[in-house]
Length: 354
Image 1 (cartoon, rainbow, N blue to C red):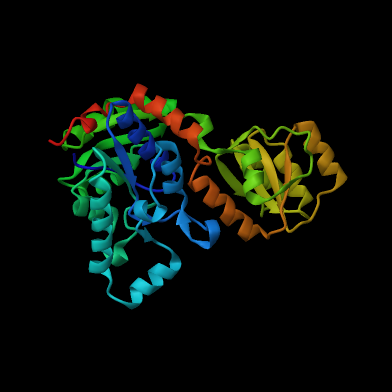
Image 2 (image 1 turned 135 degrees about the horizontal axis):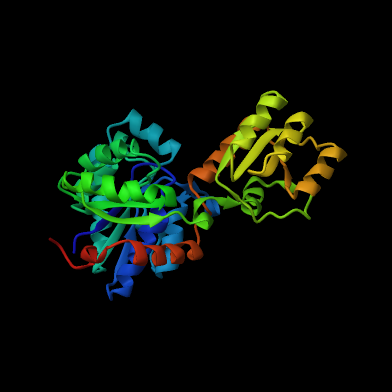
């Protein structure tokens, strides 16, 4: 059976949870299913080795008995990229990916292959996501988001890169207010262009962002008022670098947001505490706020997080956390299995090759 290649129009679309959920759904259909990620792009360093977190999670959830190097032949690290630029390694790397995939595919009825964070990642060694789909002759499931009709441009552009390998498009995390236009206008538009839409998965808040508690943990932050609830969800952030009047107007237009500012900016902190959409305030530079600010935060039930890093470093870390969504775990995948079962038609992917 040809592999299923799960890729996306961009980062933060829920691609990993969907890829592993697709594999679980195939297992429920009675298939023996493997997982493969040619390019390790979401890197961590267990036991001194740089490895992608996604194969680690897939191996655990799917019950796979393989070394990580078998599931992830290319670690797309900064060092690898620099080495590849200095020397022509396209053929060598592509051959390595093909050999690892073939060895894995021989052991399973079906292999679900996960793409990189962006379609173009891997271009240095001839392994963009479209390159991978062609190399492995894979049926491609393209995951995209939808907030307004302009997003169709990105879906069309991505779909055209998989011509001949595209199984269909799956829209994920679609807000209730966008369902009607997507279903009545966009889906027919795409299908008249031979781009099947396999499902529209609704936005679920617990999968759309991370909790304040998770954010505090990922930042290594101290919660200065632990009596405040850290169950709120953060989906975006604002940097408090303007005057207090402008800040208040800006903060009031936001929801499910973290506000990041220096610990000495009490006027910005006070403005954020007046905005109902600010779920937490992140203070940088290790500078504690005044007692008056802590008192207002207690009244507003808004947790204050204190980090030692500067604002730029903190913002980069928050952006990275939000771009990958909620921490990936078995619970997230189980929820995605449920959502795909209810809102997508993937049965054709498990019925063999066309």
